[in-house]
Length: 310
Image 1: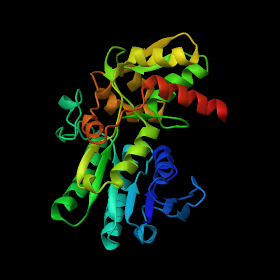
Image 2: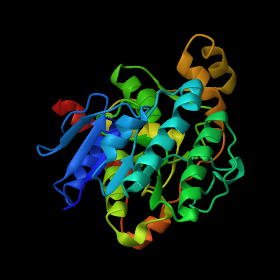
Image 3: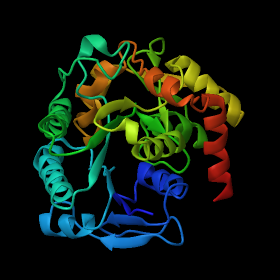
Image 4: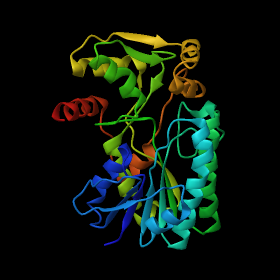
């Protein structure tokens, strides 16, 4: 048995990861400001990831460390906090000879390559938030290259899943339908977009970390085939037994909304992910592990059932 530690344990990915790790170890440590158990045997550690001493103590004794923290969706916060957190975690992993798994997104990928995002797609961030993500990746890749750290960068598309409160898809489509409103979509109903299902992301991150052959690589986590915005809206409407009413928020409208709604202001620079096809390609993982991502129809059913059960 080996201690596996989740930093940022309370979020959508951390919870699914903690469930999945039970297959591999009884020694699971959950670290956040206010951690809560997912499994009965979980060890809880309260820590602020911005405090290097607390991170050091939280990592001590771990064989594998997962950084799955999510920060508030604000450029200023990302700029001030992400590099500090990453440096604290890298230093602690090196100090205690632990391996690092970083749960990442695709904001650093070149805008001309988001129609087919692979592990080899060029890093050339088209946004300020993307520049920060690129910096974090380079910190890890530099350590791997120098032979000073064993690490995995596990990337996901935008995600959705049961009980998730940070999914754009669920906030703009599912929750609107639940309130009897029309679904919202950004820029264009006709462009392709795929989303990573959080139970798949948790399970497959655990699979990678517990396979000796997966280390020191970038992996795109299993994500089902893309659909158009219109098809996503219709898929939710069908499962929820509502009319697929929809409205489109143009770039101009979102810019205007950003004057009054802070999250909309933060979204403006990311709209390039909606005004063209966004296709996250996870064929590398699917082939190596013979893994099929959960189809959207099943995922949507499970999201609805999880809400009914609560």
